[in-house]
Image (cartoon, rainbow, N blue to C red; front, side):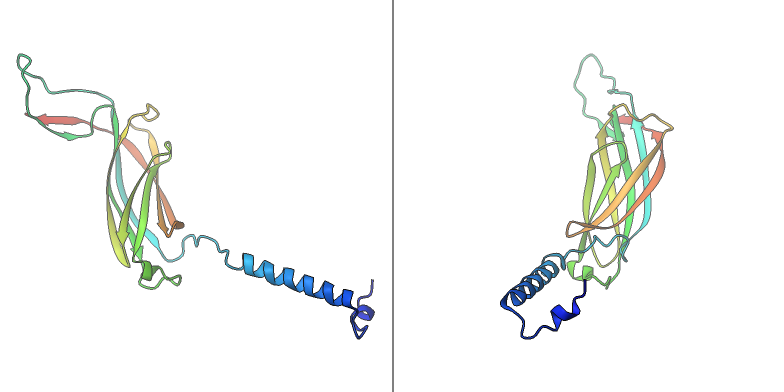
Length: 182
């Protein structure tokens, strides 16, 4: 099919003009509708610099010994019984100008999760710069982990709901304990 005679047929007929206007409108409309769609910028300038986390499992549920059924006031430390604790720090670097205006946002949400569960703990870090998120997370033991297992810790950084970077670390599940000072 040769389009040249059709294009050179001047003056164009009203039907030709209508087809041209409809095709142009559809093309411009497509650009307008989908022109703003961008990916989430994975690994673009914002980085997870350090993940220093420990995962501890305490499978024993114990209480301090009381004397003759009396009530005591005690201070407990360590991982609660029948629980998993995730403790440590995550260091995030948000550069002053990351190319997408993150410096203007000045904060990011850091999410920490374990691969075997759907639960997540989050914290907000203020940027730009190098920021540390202190992680103190206690989960109920779902009986899927054992001491000595390797667990994957997932860290995601989000700005305005879009994930901008992520990191994973494998950690060995340690035996947790709980002590009481009465």
